[in-house]
Length: 187
Image (cartoon, rainbow, N blue to C red; front, side):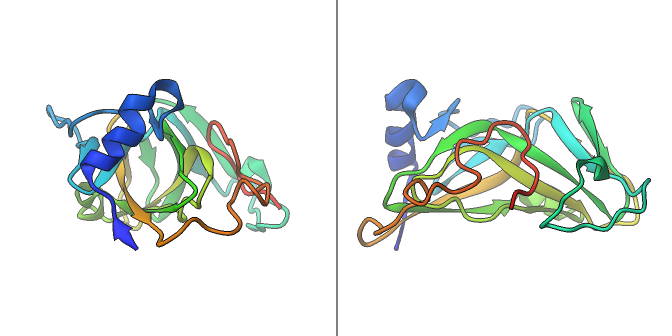
């Protein structure tokens, strides 16, 4: 597998307009008093949207991935999300991703958040998957944590396979294909 560069990411995104790999696409890393986002040397730093689902245990629910209860979350649309201590929130990227058939995308959290005890988790984006990426943001600290909407949240790294896969996510009609907004677990 080869790690793909800013040149390739830009070609796949910017020059294809609304059908590009990343929409909207930010051509260079932006910082201006914010947590950085945009294309980097060998990746793309995506932004978190202003839609959050913050975990709550008001009803003393049990988390069951086979029978998930949406009332375990409180919805917030805000520029700054406060995640309670030792809790988490779901969010989504502003960017909509379209992964090529011969590419696998790995996501890592931004160091600015990691150094504050805030961990970002995203499963790999499989070949030919597309949608807004749902992001799990964990606050591992004993203090409330701020997450800033419209700023960088995670870096996506693009890996090119030695050949296109036999069966892509689209071929098997994956359950999270084309998701928009923050998407809860599905069975």
